[in-house]
Length: 189
Image (cartoon, rainbow, N blue to C red):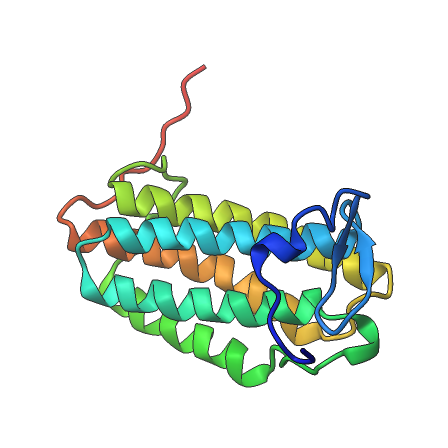
């Protein structure tokens, strides 16, 4: 039946040859830079889901969910067969602006530490810091895609860069509202 979503059991074994399907058709090697990029975006979304589940603050939960939806949009953009570019949406300047606005609002409520911090003040802030590091890795993968001529949307890279900064701020906001603000790290060797 055309247009019908395939059941998981129908997809079983389709990647046994070391390839995976792209949105809009076609296949790519599982170690392709595109697959690495959207796989890392998927990891970031899972880390944000963990933070969302751990936080006791409804505002943080809402922001995490919004960011997960943005990661879903980005992942779809990255996972789309290049011949169908844009068919499932693309990150744009409005998406980047939304992250800038969220960051300004959060910074106004939670003072930022002056130095490095040790992640792990609260379970939710630790998950946000984990998500931030995964997003940084995703950003490196997007840069590799751009350098390889596989990504022509500069807003996607801008959005991911802003997202990692926002996640740092959101982690500090989470700590502030839990009553346990982060303490600067002091290196001891």
